[in-house]
Amino acid sequence: MQLKRLSPFSGRNCKAASINCGYNQNHRMMSRRTLSLFLSIALLSANWATVNAQTQGNRYFSETGHNVKGDFLVFYDSNPDALILYGYPITEEFVSKDGLTVQYFQRARFEFHAELPEGTRVQLTALGTETYVSTGESSKNNSLACRAYPETGHTICFEFLEYFDQYGGVAQFGYPISGFEYHENKLVQYFEKARLEWQPWRLEGQRVVNADLGRVYFDQLGEDPGLIPPVRPLDNTTSSVIKINVRAFMWKATTLATDRQLVFVIVQDQNLLPVTNASCTSTVHWPDGRNETTSLATNASGIGVLPLSFATQPQGSQVYADVLCSYHGLKNSTSSSFRIWY
Image (cartoon, rainbow, N blue to C red; front, side, top):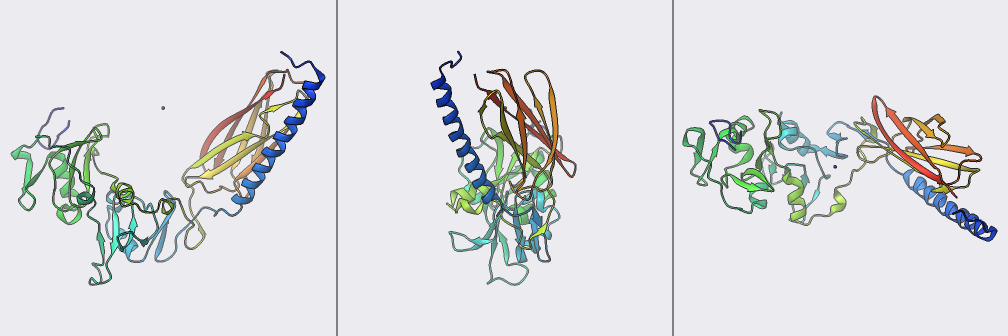
């Protein structure tokens, strides 16, 4: 790693009739259990929220499935670089274990202080100070490309200094509380309210990033992990789906040579909420080389079902199904399979 001014750190056949009879009996029992399990999932999923988002004084962030409202939203919107500096919300507003009304974001925690004058009641938690554990400083300072802060006895150098100045300086990050250190195989520098990281694999000009200390402090403080999963939008209006996840599974893992089968397709959004009316195609590849393509759409629970009927399939062969789903220009695919019993 070479340093330069303002550029620092340039994945058998079962022939006996009794055996066949036993298999058929067990097979039917397993199929009933599988179908019962699926029906239970479907009933539960009927209570899931439809993907949704924003009202006056409230914004729903589809990316993480959380609302930001009131003073916290005003504070978020007052910073034109909020997404870069704070990230998306990872909880709702709640009373923290330290007694403060807070909301966690990927890179920040907002605190509400009712005793302060209006316009200053939302403060940033000193995440850098709260999470900093020294690993020993790495000497990379250069007086020609650094600025010293006597308040804490540390300097800021190179592109860290550029980033610091560009995104708000002391008001945003607080004073530096460390020099350059290696944490998690990355070169970093801690500030009172943040940790800056050097990520050389990024494009030039984007290699300094504000670290995701929000979840780090959430876990460190022992907050309730049940606050992290996505929630419904406060106004129950529809919001954008920005990603779809597609899963498929078979009703029966094995079938007879002449039998029936069901292919279940589940489509969910980025927050694992059901996607209604996703358009899917299932292509079944039969052992004789024939490909059978069928279209289906998901219901209000994000589920589509494809029935299959077949006869005299080769025993021991594997039947594959490829599933491709799309929703408003978004696409994803998966596959599943079952075996014809010997």
